[in-house]
Image (cartoon, rainbow, N blue to C red; front, side, top):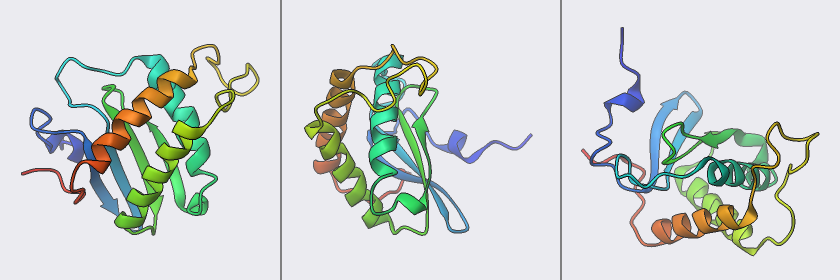
Length: 151
């Protein structure tokens, strides 16, 4: 059985940041790594779920809305995947930062926080989403984001 590409990355050396996980034609999968893997500091489900609702809504209403294929959490609880079509890396980074800023500035209910809109709607908290987004924005602002995994 062939190993999938994401399993070839040394997760013990991976730091929080934004990376290109893979390119498939005009589709790019971004690894939005908010936490260091295997370090014992993982997002809880409510945080992941809340960020997912907020980030997915804002990015699907951004200028690249027609190019967003998917946004969702990683099962390992250390980040998210964002898939886009035909958007330059630098533009994705700018929009990711813009979306994080919009989440931090937002006041109101978590998007999709109703029984009709979500299968676990009580497991959402804007404060949790804001804390994770503030943490991640600080990471992105504090490093050179070249989108490459360290060798």
